[in-house]
Image (tube, rainbow, N blue to C red; front, side):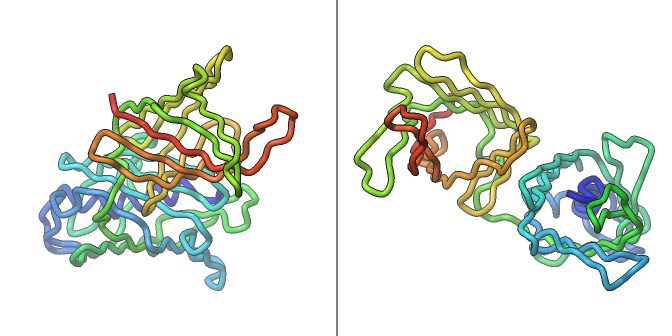
Length: 278
């Protein structure tokens, strides 16, 4: 989508830059990195065209989202899930000077972007007129103003998934009757996924007598849903409903299709998987 990099710079600057200083002369004075450690979800990311202020886009309202994870060393990882399924991951460091946020993206060393910000309880807000955005999705970014709000995540986040998980159950159940079941693990197949702290993942899937299919991408967690956004191939992200049983067992469920009769026609199915952390 339009302006992913600008969006990433915005969010992380806001949320992280807060953490590296204690100068209280600016609008964000007094905040420290300890105030921001954790996982933050975007509730609004609104870009307004500075050349035409009637043109504005809130990517959250359009079905996208963003999650920011901050640690005590003032480093961050930011995952932006764009409407349409593309994800962008950004990381870097930030500082506060005179109460303003100055952020540097690791992929753009030497360049800083300034933001005003406010921190209140478990809410963050920010604003900057130093960003650009492609409002028409034509490949051309124009000067924009960004206003954003985020909230502290109190439930499950990406950090809870970090590690390598092996499937002990991976089966398709036909819908709506459930008369047919295909258990991939029981037939000699396998599935594993490794999830990292920067929200990247790698996964492998194989069926009996077939070479494994490998993929990599980005993980996004929202409520009780887990999204896997592939780096290659495009298309919609894979969406799973999840539930933890303790800290080392994970149950996944998704709406899928499967060719139970091996006749070339996929039928509606529910995918159920149980994974154990190594």
